[in-house]
Length: 557
Image (cartoon, rainbow, N blue to C red; front, side, top):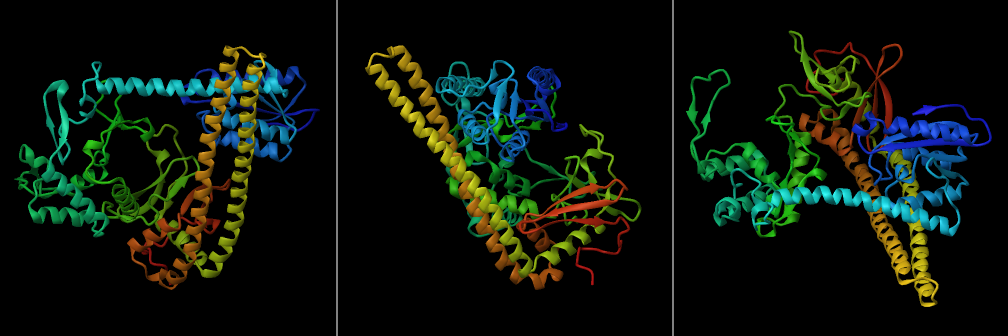
């Protein structure tokens, strides 16, 4: 973001966007900026701010666009300049919202490719057509990518069952039948019953994954790898020569977690979960939206509600567990650096002093960070003392009142967008009816009617999709309010126990209050922590002269 001074007759903001970092590093952003600056100079506009995003045009929750809308609502702009409409948005419903916002605050929209946006009904109709094509092209690109992946998975001859062969070995609960292209997965009833029982133990009986593992071993149930070769196990890290074969029915925790995390047990077979560069054997996980999922309801063993509850249980356990750490870090998974990287625990020196170090200090980091590490005990004492002072019934009540006001503003903003879209929907319906009446009166040909109808239908679909998304956001805002209110009762009971909580209870508390800590460095080299939780936020100083005898994070004193 580049800022300038405010002056001249027309205060202009430039907004540019690309979808990927690859585009950003190529020519698109500099080219757009160059064209927009030239347009502003040609028309005597004063550029007061330049904003950019490297995100999809399908969403309106982009940092640059959000800042642009804030400036529009604040009356700080007269003009917005973009290179083309598809750089502003590739969603017709979002374009209708932005157009209404610009009109309401008397801000002009200019395109480098064709000048000022039209404000006449026919001009807006053609703009709707362009926005519809932009959204259509975005959906076509996504559809072509997905179709190509599905065809590759399914095989060129579309042989039934080919899409389900995503595994070198059949997952526990299944076996392969057939050969080559006819090979497919089928359920093994005996193993399926064990899978269902495992989910029941975790969700209904409340067992941990470790307890589930011990119970399977005690029952002598064959493991997934008992089907083939014996497994060699090294009993001790420093005793590699003394090896033994794992006995049949001896389960390990990773096998249990793998079963509980696999979506095949609800009838979903996932492909393209990892990517490999060239012939590399190193697999990098893909984002879930990039997976290709094949529906296979005949393979479902547990219902989706039970599976979802199991995932929530596993997620909570993963956040609060400390069993895999050599040293305990109270703020693990809660600390980030201002450079954007997460901070991780690291021990140094003969005394094994604990630190939180920025991930950007690692050699493999794409952008190196030179900020120094922070003593773990110093940071943990400062954050825990702050949290202890904030988690009082009085402070929480104050925080809830502030949050209620913020939530009300958010709900009002969402409700305003819903009202705008409902008005746009009614107008689109009226235009659709008028087009039919014009055809009946002989003013439009059948081809023109079809073209108008396709445009209005596309607008209605886009608006309906956005209305559904906004309605879901309203429900989320209501749920967040209920969650914050529940925290008051929770903290009232817990406050007197805070100094005596175990490590696990402390970690669970940090998870419950949604604690985040961002490490900052001031101009004098001082370290600060910006701390935020559900009901409060603050900026607290951190000293690296920590009490090294402090352990287990009991509150001092």
